[in-house]
Image: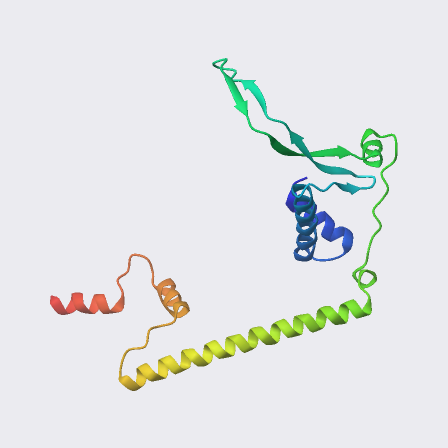
Length: 182
């Protein structure tokens, strides 16, 4: 199982979507990594223990040349498997079924209301931002029109025009020039 499959399994197990599950999985991994890097021991009962192992400075030998090399002191992550995890993998204990969680049971009414209000706030902010950008863009185009300058085509219009042309065919202005010069 890779990271994407883990996220899909978490989403299916919680009844949420994959984007939400990705945030939760990333938060768990980030918390474990930051805690272990800070020297803390992270114990997940039944699963295992994550800790930082201190390695002292030592002298080793290069296997090719046989020359001694001094290695500085370092730290490495270490994971010790928990008893429940070990027993389930070895088959000594049956793996319990993951209970199905329906989306309605997973969220309480206050949590739903809070999420809805956050989404509405985000949508309103996005719409407001788009309106202000649109207003600025219209001011620029009207000022250019007043000066008699050409207004540039929007990128989408340029892409659409380029897509509509058939490959290998000349564009309209170029073909007119070609016919005039003959």
